[in-house]
Length: 343
Image 1 (cartoon, rainbow, N blue to C red):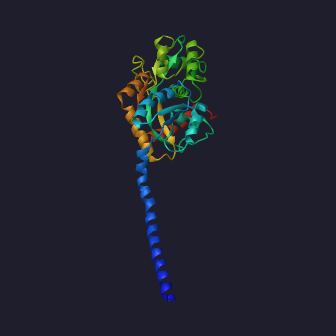
Image 2 (cartoon, rainbow, N blue to C red):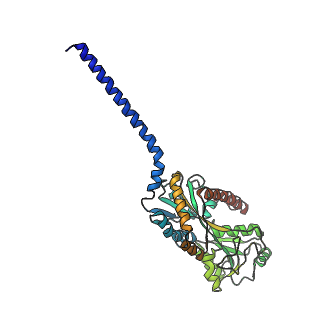
Image 3 (cartoon, rainbow, N blue to C red):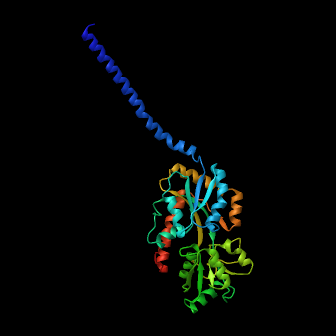
C-alpha cells in the first residue's frame, strides 16, 4: 500500500475521532446546567422523605414543649412525614439551639423556641452560636399570655395597689421566675420598668417551683404562663391581678390586662418560632412554612391551641425573621436598662 495514502487515511481518522470527542464533550458540558436548573424543583418534590426532628430546647411540660407536641401531629399530616419532638434542655435553651445551629441544613433538623431565643444574646456573654446568623426562620406558631399572680396573704387586690405597696417598701417584695432570662423573668422586668417598682428577683429551676413558692408565700408574686396558672387561680390558691397581653384572655375574661390596670404601655406575650439551620435551601424552608401554616389553619389545631392558652399565629419566613431581629434589639435594650449583667 502507498505509505502516503496510509498516512493520509490515518490523519483523517484521527480528525474524525477528534470531532466526535468534541461533540461528546459539548453534550456533557450542557448536563450540569440542566441539572442546576431542575434541582430546586426536584428537591421541593422529594422533601421530606423521612421524619423531621423538632428539637425542644427545654424540659418536658413547659410551654415550648406543649406547643411542639400540639402542632406535631397536625404538621405531620401536612408534611406527609412524622414530626418528632426531641427535648434537649439546658443553659436556658442554648444547648438545644446549638445542636440545630450545627446540624446539616437539609430541613430535617429544626427547633422550636420562645422569647429566650431573642433574650439570650444579651443575657450570655458568650454563646456557642450567633442567633442572627446561624438560623433561618421557618415561621411563627403562636403567642401566649402570662398572668401576674400574687400570694393570697398579700393585701394588694389590683395592680395599682401592688405598685403602691412595692414603692412603699422598696426591695422587700419578691417575685419568683422559672430562671434568669426566662419569660417569667422578662415579664417581671418589663413590669418593674413600666411601674418604677423595686421588686427583687428570685430565680427557680422551672416555673412549677416558682408558682408553688408563690402559693406558699415564700415569694409574693410571679408571672407564670396563663394556662399553667389557670387551675391554681380557679382553686383560689393564687390571686390573679392582671394578664400581660394587649387584650384579655378567653381563659380568664374577668381578669384585666396590665395596660388596663394603670400601666398603658405594658404588653408582654411569649411568642413561639420554628427555626432551621442557616443555609437550609429556600424551597425546603418554603415547604416547611407552607405546611406549618396549613396545620395552624385547621380548626382542630386552632381549638387545641386556644384551649391550652395559645393564640395561633402564622407568618412567612421573612416576617418571622424580621420579628426575631426586632425582638433581639428590644430585649438587649431592656436587659441593659434592668442592669442585668451577662453571665
